[in-house]
Length: 470
Image 1 (cartoon, rainbow, N blue to C red):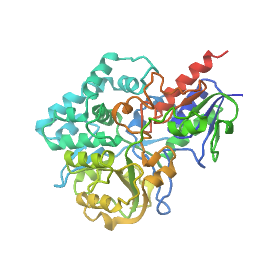
Image 2: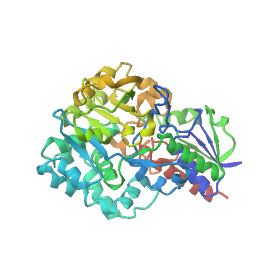
Image 3: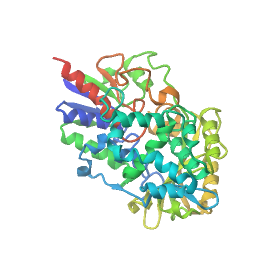
Image 4: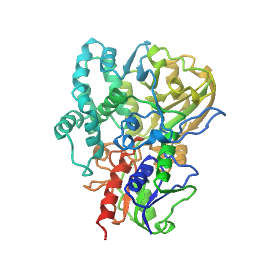
């Protein structure tokens, strides 16, 4: 009998399997797709030689992840590559605010009236970042806080809605860039703890940047899988699990799936019936015959570029998708241009590029024209650079990754208490109604992103159970 079986080879499932194997437990991992990866894959979606990331592409949480940093992933080929700027937020007049590795450079891009405010906001946390991110991403009850004072100060700043925090700024550049940071979790700006979301992304950039993985995000998953195999674990692809009886006997089962999928497989009935899915992404991957013709020079050297004319436009777009049930006329866009840091991703002189906007969960329309109109506002002539497109609305995203229910790439609405208490109100979020079955996906704390911490935290709960058994 195996000690543990893990279902789902996304970053969290892979991390959970590695953590268990590192501690001497026998582990087998089962994945329905023909390759490991989940939300961290790389494929030729458009033309030969253009290597796209169908899901996540830039990894501020990955490079800062306590779980990943504790593993020898570089030994298995993972290499982080950095653009000159982690992120830029251009404006219609050709100027831009930036999120730089340097706090001073970032603050200066906001203008003199907000520079000091921004520095006072982030600088107290940076000396304590490694401890803070471990405490922040390990809660609840998976580890005692190592620096409870700093964590409490962070909570005071981050637990209120981001709109409260943004009131500290006087001018639009700072407000708009920060609104864009919060919008990465596809939640309205006025939600509980959304200030913490923006702070985490900003601090992550200042601490270690927003890199891409050399060759594509698949490198992260491949490194985890290779490490697992070296530790004696086994990986089985093309293996769809529809019920627990499909799996070999084990002392524990760990699922990198949504709560509702786990309920179907394990027969938990309506246990997770109140779990909510949020707004969806509409994503377009592009093969371009050259760089994106951004008007703002800062955007040309940034790995990630946020698109929204001002904070009001971003707020309107988020409200339309998540609260009003309609696609925004001017969607807020998150775009990534990996070739700025990694020229191996496309043939010489050409680039891969992707952009996504927010739409209602399960939306069936086509946002491509609205996305490209937005891009043309900030990069005139963009359409002339397009060689090919791969379009993925909510249905296509859900087909690529079963955890993206209705196109929700956060694997559960990041709104209200569900941003912090996932998948339901519980002191033990990785436990389930069955004592031998655990959940480790992004539907559990600390939530979405390629960081492996949900898998790391769940693995702790599993090995405590296994060690307590005779």
